[in-house]
Structure formats: C-alpha cells, structure tokens
Image 1 (cartoon, one colour):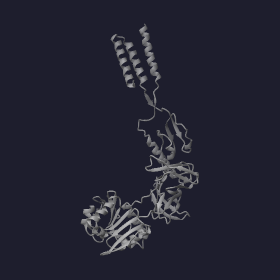
Image 2 (image 1 turned 120 degrees about the vertical axis):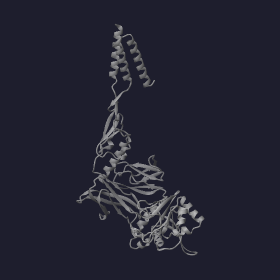
Image 3 (image 1 turned 90 degrees about the horizontal axis):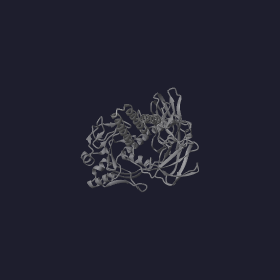
Image 4 (image 1 turned 60 degrees about the horizontal axis):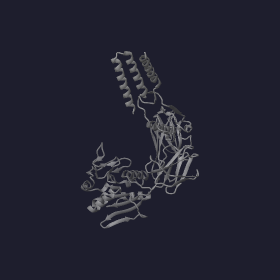
Length: 518
C-alpha cells in the first residue's frame, strides 16, 4: 500500500472516530482522537526540512588526488580558488558544487597544435584585463618574430618556413614593459597533403599562368588544359596518377562554351562532392549563369576595384553588389569578391576579380595567402585516413593525459614511457579512440602508431602559463557545476525528526484509553 493510501486511511479513521465522539458530546475525547490522527499522519508523511542529508566534502585544489576512495555519505562538494582540472572532475560523480569563481588573474591562449606548411600560424590571447598590453612571439633563439599591441584580445601571426616541430615563446607585457605572462608555444608544422586539381580553361592569360605556378609550387597535382585557339590546346598532365581529384577550376569562357551534356556532367560531379571554382573575369553571357546556376550577373561600371588585401580590378559581370548584404539568391558573397553556394554534396564558387598576376613578383607571399583564403571559401577538403586530436587541456607531468585520434586501431607505443596501450572507443568523442597515460617529465612525448605513424604531444612544465592553467581549471569547474544546477529555493534537505509525532500519538492514545477506563 503506497503512502498516499495510508495517509488517506488514517485521515478517514480520524474523522469517523472524532465524529462518533462528537455525536455523544464527548468533546475532549474527540479532540484527543483528532490529535492522535494528525500525529500519526505526520509520522508517516516523511516530511523534509532544508538542510543536508549527508555532508559536504571540501576539496583542496592543491591536492586533488587526495580525495577519499569512497564518497558514501557525501551529498555535495565545495572547492575554493580556481577549482580542478577537467580530468579530476571527470572522476567524480555529479554532485551539487559550492564554488565562487575568482575574478581576474587568468587568460586564455588559442593556437593550432598542428599546421600545414604554407599556412599562417596565429596565436590569440584573450585577457580578462582590458588594459593596454603588448604580445610578443619569440623564436627559439629569443629573436622577436611578431608582435601586437592593444587592449583586450591580442593576436600575432607568423609563417613557418619549414616543416618541423616548433617550440616558440610568447610573452605578454603591460604598458610599462613589465612581463605579465610568458611561456612556450609548441606546435607541429607538417607537409601539406597535395591538392589534386583539374583545370579547364577557354582562353590563356597571365592570371592562369600565375595560378598554375602557385599550385605547382605548393606540390599540387595538376591536370591542366588551356584552349589556345581553334583545335589548339595546351595540356599539362599530372606528374603522378590522380586518384581522387578534390578541386576543379574553370574559367567562365570554358563554362559558356560547353555543350548542354558536358555542362550537366560537370554539375553532376559537383553534386557528388567535387568543389568547383569559376574564374569569372571573362564571363560574357549572363543568361547561361542564370539558367544553369541561378547566378544573377549584372554589368558593372568600369574602374571597379577590390582594395584589400590586394588591389585587383573587378570582373565586368558580377552578382548584385549590395551595401548591406552579399546575398544573391542561393549565393552568398563576401568582401573578397568570392560568391559561393552549395550544390547538393558539393560547392560552387565564383571569383569576381582578375589581374592577380600583377602581384606575383612584388607581393608573392600576400598573393599566396589570398589564394589560400579563396580555396578555403571554396570548401576544399583534404581527406586523411587518420587525424590526431588536440588535448582538451594542457598536458602536465604527473597529471592524467588523454590522447585521442580518428582512424586508429590496435596499439599505440610510447617509447619514453616504455608502454604500449590499446586504443579505446569513447562515447563523447565521435569516431575517435583514446588512451590515457601519465607523462613523467616536460617536453615532447613521442608516440608511434602502425597506421597513423609517428606523433608527439608537448607536455608543459608545471610552472608554464599559470594564468592559462587557472583559466582551464575555472572552465572545467564551471562545466562540472552546470551538471547539477540548483535553482533558487532548492538545495540539500534532510528528513524531519519523526519521534515527536510518535510521542504525541502515543500520549493522545494513552489519554484516550485512561478516559475510557474511568
């Protein structure tokens, strides 16, 4: 019988008994019966009052590994300071947490742990303090290679010259050149996966020659055909077999001269996932673009130019240039004059500038970076069999480290630790496997996998970037606290003592028995 039925039966018995006594005008006996029924009902109601059903365990952030092996009787946790690392919180069950987040004294660093050669390395520092400061990026020999000044978030950029493991140094100084924070910046520069580009062009130009040189210089495989005149085509075959082309480049003239069947076959390849970049500088027939790609082109006034990052003239035909929006139907534009749209599984991009060849000699690096940005807008993806994932927080000696990767199986070997660990699937890591280990000393921790090859994770010294460590601990503690949020008026409770109700019930019944015996 559940609690509600028991309480209802007690209430019914009390009401009936009191009514019988009242009918016989035995007022005091009726009052004793009512008191006994109320006391018995309260005894079985399992009333609770604010308080703690157990105890609150105070965690010392300086010694998180000294937690008790059993949390029996613990219903809440409390922590002071910056809190604990994510690895420590993940070992604890979800319990209400008492914690006051500190203010100030922390910063967040953001930079890629792996970078392809030819890409720009960017270090970004987010500060709670918004005062004027200077961020410096130093080479391994201490030479300054980049700097940025300002208030709030600061960012510096650097182009790695070779593929290697790099440990730079970053330094944050205040307006009086006093060091606020400094520490190592480790990352790996690896050789890029070569593009496999199919190029088909209806007319030669200096722009095509420069684009060809840029892509060939990056190691791309090129299947390049340029129509020089009637029945004359210059062909460049790839230096090795192209197994999976991942970009097609056309000029507008070639697209306009295609037959309907050839154009449909091209768009079919795009629909299957092949990105298509159209060089729109020699477009001539707006109707074809409107009918086939829903791209509205309008004649632009002569003399229009793209000013940044490089000065280039605009194509004669472009989608509408609106001052407040770059949308043109399903197409989305940007300030760099690249319009894009999705085409089923693929993407089509329209480049609306020309004459970039003028910058090939004077500004080759800026031109290469600009073209890299264009290809990023196109959505070129380089499929890899395996992918190493960056650690979730700073690896430290003596602290548990999770190494995760996609596309791996079997064992991974750590020569310095003389360990071979088996990859384990993780529910919170999509398509990834992980291993857990405890690094012993700072520096590069090497690992070898039969499929993914060699890899290394940098283990920081405990004294490196204390402000960044503090921010990571605060973020992890905030995430743990959000697992069991408490709304106002809610909190731990404890059962109300039941013995007073039992005593009142017994006293009322004894008094009633005594009166009946008289």
